[in-house]
Image 1 (tube, rainbow, N blue to C red):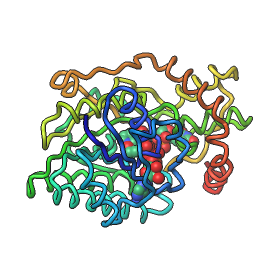
Image 2: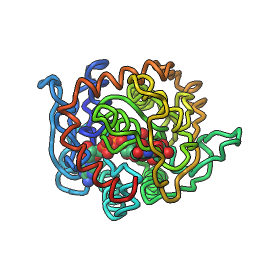
Image 3: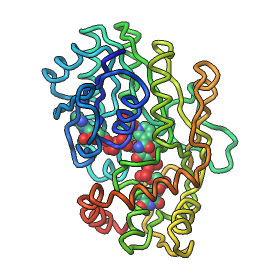
Length: 332
Ligand code: NAD
Ligand code: DAU
C-alpha cells in the first residue's frame, strides 16, 4: 500500500485515475488541484473519506508542494493547462503551469527522494502525414507545434534532465487522445455530444480529415498504474490503444448514435497550425510491462460516454455557455 500525491486530480484524466486507483488498489490518494476553470471538485464526489484527501492549491506554490510531496510515497503529475485552442489565445498560463509547475514538483521530489511519474502527451512529437505508415515511438524526435505542446515538451525535458543530473526516480508517459467521463465541454467529443443534447449543430474544424488516436481514459489509468509498479526509472513509455479515427468519422458516429442524421454538422474555421495526425506505437509498454487496453470497441465506449453526458447535465451545464461563447468569438 502506498500514498499517492496526484496533481490535477480534479481534471478529466486525473479524476479518472483517482477513481481507478481507489477502485482497483489499496493505495491512499491526496489530490492537489488549483480548481482552474478545467477542474471540478464534483468529479471526485463519493470517494472513500478514509483513503482520499483533497487539497486546493497550486503546483507552482513551493510551500504547499513541499509539504505534500514530503508526505507521499509517489507523485503522479497530471496538472496542466491542457487545451490547444486556449494556448493559441493566451500562452502565458501554459508556460507558468506546465513549465514552472513541473519544475516546482521536480525540486520537491529531488529534495525528498520520492518516486515521480510524469504525465505527458503524444503531441510533443508533432504530427504525421495522413498517408505515412509510421507511428510515434519512444525514439521519435520532439517537434511540438502549439504553445500547449511545446510547454509539455519542455516539461518532459526538465524531467529527463532531473533524472540524469540529480538521479530523480522518474518515469514519463506520452499518451494519445483520451475520451470518457468527466471531460470538459471545450474538448472535441464532449463539445459535440453536449451540442447535440442542446440542439446545437456539431462543429468540425476545417475539412475534418485530421486523425486522432483515441483511447478510453480508464485504459490510460491502468497504463499509468502499470508504469508506476513495473516501469524502469528514467524511461519513457508511449500509451495508445490503436484507435486512429478522423474527426469527420467521429462526429458522424456521435450524430448517428444520438439519433440524428450523420451530416447534421457545420464546418467551421480551422485551428491555426492544426496537427494533421497522431498515432502511437505502444509496443514497448505492451511487451516489456505486459499492459493491454480493455476498451477495444470505440463505438461501445462512445455509447457509454454519450450516456454519461446525458445523465450528468448538472456536471457540464455550468461551463457550456461560456465555452460556446469563446468558440463563437473565433468563428468556431
Ligand atoms: P484538464 O484540463 O481536464 O485538467 C487539468 C487539471 O489541472 C484541472 O483540474 C486543473 O484545475 C488543474 N490545474 C491546472 N493548473 C494547475 C495548477 N497551476 N496547479 C494545480 N492544478 C492545476 O486536463 P486533462 O485533459 O485531464 O489532462 C491531464 C494531463 O494529461 C495533462 O498533463 C495533459 O497534458 C495530459 N494528457 C492529456 C490527454 C487528453 O487527451 N486530454 C492526452 C495525453 C496527455
Ligand atoms: O493527443 C493528446 C492531446 O489530445 C492532449 O495532449 C490534449 O491535452 C488534448 O486536449 C487533446 O488535444 P487535441 O487538440 O487533439 O484535442 P481536442 O479535443 O481539442 O481536438 C481533437 C480534434 O478535434 C482536433 O483535430 C481538433 C478537432 N476539433 C476540436 C474541437 C474542440 C474540431 O474539429 N471541432 C471542435 O469543436
